[in-house]
Image: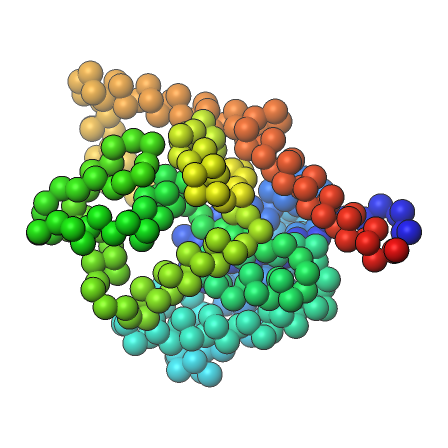
Length: 321
């Protein structure tokens, strides 16, 4: 049996949209800082968004890199150079963008066969990623980018459809089966949930839900102390394996001056403002503690890396016999 130590190699596949891409890249950087070889898959026009940060990490001794693949813009009926969701300005273009996502399956599969990673972390929108990982006998980790609360609420809405049992868009209803009594109205829901017939987007949402359930587990951009009841609900009631390794956010966040001034006015006056400020400080401290050594997110990532190493060790031992 090969007893030589090996470095865990994880491939990261972000969705080509700013709100999805940036947190998953931050996650790849976090893995690299914990000794993992991290490879980020991107396209020619998306990679420059984060390439400087990745280069800096590499210069600091972390094993992180970017692999570029061609984005099939023309093949999917998109204008040349349209490689990010931010370029999309119509439903027809959105449908073509989803088509381009599905066309990436074959080149991604070829890249995985070439790189031989131990794990694939793929954004939720790549519904075929679990199938590809299964074919290569490696775990696929599903990345949503949101919190457990939202995933629990969405699961309840899809499972029980309480919004279809009210008489109007403005009649309140309770989202069933959750740790708290959550009330909302049909008017507040996303359009795809209100549709009575299945279309391309609702079909994709159902595929995403199935892909999540079939994946090895879920990486959550949150921390346990922020939503403990929903972390437990997601794991124990919904039966999902999950690791909470957030919050993932850039150290420098740009905010417009007028938005900042408006927020300052809201936060400066009255008892409610004082309560908001105190709660914000409390959450900031909780988030910082979660990410530090010994914190809940740090410990969850440690547990995940140990599990991935154990899987690979078991695979090597089986192959040796």
